[in-house]
Length: 166
Image 1 (cartoon, one colour):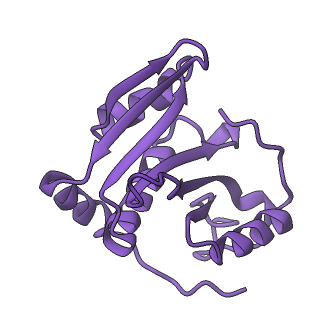
Image 2: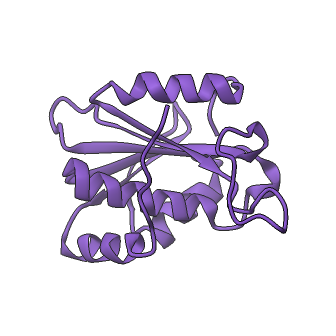
Protein backbone atom coordinates (compact mmCIF):
# COMPACT_ATOMS: atom_id res chain seq x y z
CA UNK A 1 0.00 0.00 0.00
CA UNK A 2 1.64 3.17 -1.17
CA UNK A 3 0.48 6.72 -1.43
CA UNK A 4 2.11 7.32 -4.79
CA UNK A 5 0.27 8.54 -7.85
CA UNK A 6 0.07 6.30 -10.92
CA UNK A 7 2.62 7.20 -13.61
CA UNK A 8 2.76 6.50 -17.32
CA UNK A 9 5.39 4.03 -18.53
CA UNK A 10 7.48 6.95 -19.86
CA UNK A 11 7.28 8.69 -16.47
CA UNK A 12 8.26 5.47 -14.67
CA UNK A 13 11.29 4.98 -16.91
CA UNK A 14 12.27 8.66 -16.50
CA UNK A 15 12.01 8.32 -12.73
CA UNK A 16 14.05 5.11 -12.81
CA UNK A 17 16.69 6.88 -14.93
CA UNK A 18 16.95 9.78 -12.44
CA UNK A 19 17.15 7.34 -9.50
CA UNK A 20 19.83 5.40 -11.35
CA UNK A 21 22.16 8.35 -10.75
CA UNK A 22 21.21 8.52 -7.05
CA UNK A 23 23.55 6.48 -4.86
CA UNK A 24 21.02 5.92 -2.05
CA UNK A 25 18.08 4.56 -4.12
CA UNK A 26 17.56 1.55 -6.31
CA UNK A 27 14.37 0.77 -8.17
CA UNK A 28 13.48 -1.98 -10.60
CA UNK A 29 10.32 -1.88 -12.68
CA UNK A 30 8.39 -5.16 -12.53
CA UNK A 31 7.09 -6.37 -15.89
CA UNK A 32 4.64 -9.16 -16.62
CA UNK A 33 6.47 -12.39 -17.45
CA UNK A 34 4.15 -13.62 -20.16
CA UNK A 35 5.08 -12.88 -23.79
CA UNK A 36 2.89 -10.42 -25.64
CA UNK A 37 1.33 -13.28 -27.59
CA UNK A 38 1.59 -17.06 -27.59
CA UNK A 39 3.84 -17.14 -30.68
CA UNK A 40 6.44 -14.81 -29.16
CA UNK A 41 9.21 -15.64 -26.71
CA UNK A 42 10.28 -12.03 -26.15
CA UNK A 43 8.67 -9.06 -24.46
CA UNK A 44 8.68 -5.38 -25.36
CA UNK A 45 9.88 -3.79 -22.13
CA UNK A 46 8.58 -0.39 -23.23
CA UNK A 47 5.01 -1.63 -23.69
CA UNK A 48 2.92 0.16 -21.04
CA UNK A 49 0.69 -2.89 -20.60
CA UNK A 50 3.70 -4.96 -19.43
CA UNK A 51 4.41 -2.94 -16.27
CA UNK A 52 2.77 -4.40 -13.18
CA UNK A 53 4.69 -2.73 -10.34
CA UNK A 54 8.06 -1.87 -8.89
CA UNK A 55 10.50 -2.92 -6.18
CA UNK A 56 12.83 -0.49 -4.42
CA UNK A 57 15.38 -0.09 -1.70
CA UNK A 58 16.70 3.03 -0.04
CA UNK A 59 19.94 3.51 1.87
CA UNK A 60 18.73 6.27 4.17
CA UNK A 61 19.80 5.22 7.69
CA UNK A 62 22.59 7.60 8.71
CA UNK A 63 23.47 5.38 11.70
CA UNK A 64 23.81 2.29 9.49
CA UNK A 65 24.62 3.21 5.86
CA UNK A 66 24.50 -0.50 4.91
CA UNK A 67 20.84 -0.90 5.93
CA UNK A 68 18.39 -1.06 3.02
CA UNK A 69 14.72 -0.21 3.42
CA UNK A 70 12.73 -2.36 1.00
CA UNK A 71 9.43 -1.57 -0.72
CA UNK A 72 7.42 -3.51 -3.25
CA UNK A 73 4.25 -2.71 -5.12
CA UNK A 74 2.39 -5.01 -7.49
CA UNK A 75 -0.27 -2.60 -8.70
CA UNK A 76 -1.81 -4.70 -11.46
CA UNK A 77 -4.65 -6.52 -9.69
CA UNK A 78 -4.52 -9.51 -12.06
CA UNK A 79 -0.87 -10.06 -11.04
CA UNK A 80 -1.36 -10.16 -7.27
CA UNK A 81 -1.40 -13.42 -5.32
CA UNK A 82 0.88 -15.18 -7.83
CA UNK A 83 4.17 -15.00 -5.90
CA UNK A 84 5.53 -12.14 -8.02
CA UNK A 85 6.18 -9.83 -5.05
CA UNK A 86 8.10 -12.60 -3.29
CA UNK A 87 10.14 -13.35 -6.41
CA UNK A 88 11.11 -9.74 -7.11
CA UNK A 89 11.94 -9.12 -3.45
CA UNK A 90 14.26 -12.13 -3.45
CA UNK A 91 16.02 -10.84 -6.56
CA UNK A 92 16.27 -7.31 -5.14
CA UNK A 93 17.67 -8.66 -1.88
CA UNK A 94 20.21 -10.74 -3.81
CA UNK A 95 21.27 -7.64 -5.75
CA UNK A 96 21.52 -5.58 -2.54
CA UNK A 97 23.61 -8.21 -0.75
CA UNK A 98 25.89 -9.17 -3.64
CA UNK A 99 26.37 -5.84 -5.43
CA UNK A 100 25.74 -3.13 -2.83
CA UNK A 101 27.01 -5.08 0.21
CA UNK A 102 23.90 -4.41 2.30
CA UNK A 103 24.17 -5.86 5.83
CA UNK A 104 20.63 -5.27 7.12
CA UNK A 105 17.12 -5.01 5.68
CA UNK A 106 14.12 -3.18 7.12
CA UNK A 107 10.52 -2.84 5.95
CA UNK A 108 7.70 -0.69 7.26
CA UNK A 109 4.26 -2.00 6.40
CA UNK A 110 0.75 -0.83 7.24
CA UNK A 111 -0.51 -3.19 9.96
CA UNK A 112 -3.62 -3.88 7.86
CA UNK A 113 -1.50 -5.23 4.96
CA UNK A 114 -1.53 -8.82 6.19
CA UNK A 115 -0.36 -10.32 2.88
CA UNK A 116 2.81 -8.18 2.79
CA UNK A 117 3.57 -8.95 6.43
CA UNK A 118 3.15 -12.65 5.61
CA UNK A 119 5.59 -12.43 2.68
CA UNK A 120 8.30 -10.78 4.74
CA UNK A 121 7.87 -12.96 7.85
CA UNK A 122 7.08 -16.37 6.37
CA UNK A 123 8.78 -16.30 2.97
CA UNK A 124 11.76 -14.01 3.62
CA UNK A 125 12.53 -14.61 7.31
CA UNK A 126 12.01 -11.08 8.64
CA UNK A 127 11.10 -10.55 12.30
CA UNK A 128 8.87 -7.88 13.78
CA UNK A 129 10.89 -5.33 15.76
CA UNK A 130 8.41 -2.46 16.22
CA UNK A 131 4.72 -1.69 16.04
CA UNK A 132 3.42 1.88 15.88
CA UNK A 133 -0.18 2.44 16.92
CA UNK A 134 0.08 6.08 15.82
CA UNK A 135 1.18 5.27 12.26
CA UNK A 136 -0.62 1.88 12.21
CA UNK A 137 2.62 0.40 10.95
CA UNK A 138 4.74 -2.68 11.60
CA UNK A 139 8.54 -2.63 11.28
CA UNK A 140 10.25 -5.90 10.31
CA UNK A 141 13.99 -6.52 10.03
CA UNK A 142 16.38 -9.13 8.68
CA UNK A 143 20.14 -9.18 9.22
CA UNK A 144 22.35 -10.48 6.43
CA UNK A 145 23.91 -13.62 7.90
CA UNK A 146 25.34 -16.81 6.39
CA UNK A 147 21.86 -18.32 6.02
CA UNK A 148 20.62 -15.31 4.06
CA UNK A 149 23.78 -15.22 1.94
CA UNK A 150 23.18 -18.88 1.00
CA UNK A 151 19.51 -18.12 0.27
CA UNK A 152 20.29 -15.17 -2.02
CA UNK A 153 22.71 -17.33 -4.00
CA UNK A 154 19.94 -19.86 -4.52
CA UNK A 155 17.35 -17.17 -5.29
CA UNK A 156 19.50 -15.55 -7.96
CA UNK A 157 20.80 -18.76 -9.55
CA UNK A 158 18.00 -18.74 -12.17
CA UNK A 159 18.25 -15.00 -12.90
CA UNK A 160 20.09 -13.46 -15.83
CA UNK A 161 21.38 -9.92 -16.08
CA UNK A 162 20.78 -7.90 -19.19
CA UNK A 163 22.19 -4.52 -20.12
CA UNK A 164 19.98 -1.57 -19.37
CA UNK A 165 19.60 0.49 -22.54
CA UNK A 166 18.09 3.94 -22.37
